[in-house]
Length: 443
Image (tube, rainbow, N blue to C red; front, side, top):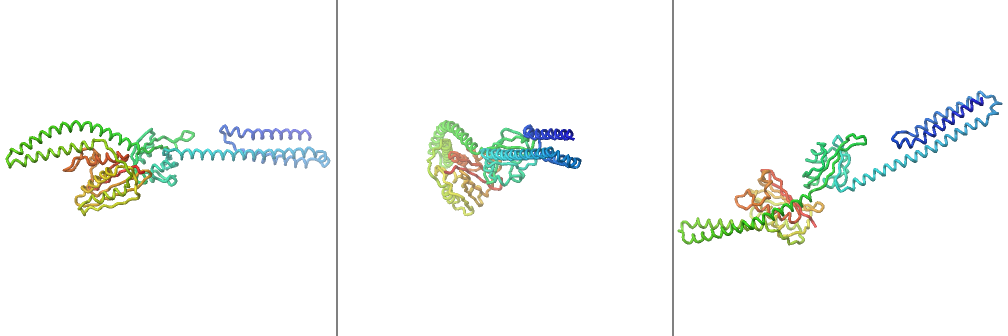
């Protein structure tokens, strides 16, 4: 009997050592990527070991005689003490594993929060979508650039949040390093976006969606327009100076002969001679306009209340035409640094053009609002509108659709606005009126 008990005790100790070795190996196996549940091992060991020990003790008590029981108290006590020690060590290990688990969870939460802080601090807009075209993440920069509330669009379809061409770009699921698109934001701004698109993959390399990184190129585009305009004006100035000199020499000769002819011709031929002199005056005026347009703009900078300036300009535009109604909607005063005379000239030209597009009457609506560090002015009329071909060329010098005019009005407006660090664009449909949108930096 003593020999059987010794065998059992030896088996029990080896079982205990095997379990303890497995418990100590659990963290190492977990680090190697093997998914093991330490609590499960402890539970199984306890459930298997406890009944086995109890059954053995119970059988020993039944088979041994009272005298033998009295002789073996120390052996049974040893087994019970060993079992209690084993359970205590397993509980200690369980508490250690719980502590490690809590630490790992806390560290994971900390890393996730840190990554989220990085995403929200990036100045570029970042948006991720899944394969079902639903928005999974969007940072604050993206919300500010696109004019939407980032918190309200999570798990929404891109069709319900964005406009074209952004929807088409996202639905194509193409990877590209750089694409430039013009976009109308949720807060009614026209911006240029530089977009980079790439696939979004999980740790196994499976494609789970797409990620888009984009920047606001509006200011860069405005700066490019300023540089291009200055280059064109510089070239035009050099060319016009030489042409005007040659033309004015010839015009002076023509005008001299016409005046001489006017003195010697018969009275019936004088209207023809007068017509020649009138055309020479018109040509001289065109040359003067060209030289004035090509000449570099010198700004007399001062503080300008844009709302007051536009209101005063609009009051003098309709003249005696009571059929034209002008309405204003000013959300801010829009203080700017600029040349009040030139700005007044620019807005006057735009309002005059709008009035001339409505010979039978109509309405002109002027809106002024401040968006971040920009003042946006929109001038909308209910006139005849423009075709797309005309709209693309309206800011070119000497391009006009009017019977009378030199085609420098809108070109001069663009020059004035760009020289103030702003931008101007036009939208129109034939027969549906036109809208001009001007942006200027506010103080």
